[in-house]
Length: 127
Image (cartoon, rainbow, N blue to C red; front, side):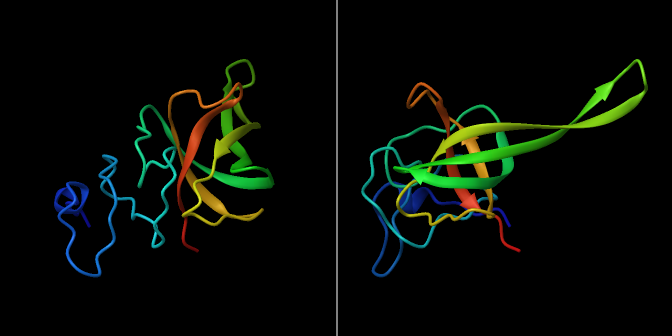
């Protein structure tokens, strides 16, 4: 499943091949569409660093930004049980990735893009 994208990232893509950067996460597939957005991790210069999360899209009403919900379990030592928690985060959506409310997506941490936006959508989860 590991693939190497260095030939395409250096601009040596052949006829009919998609041009995209190597973002350093080999198990993620790049999107089929190509965009010219500078804040796209696949076709622009935006670096992805830090944590990756699988989240659910809740709203897509802002311009190129989505509200996502991160659900996780938190351990409470007093009761020796887990409780469910959720956080809402804002993530930038590149034009080459189409998302709608209810989709499961993978987001990655990046530099702060706005006051509350520090994540970018990398791909949609199939199924």
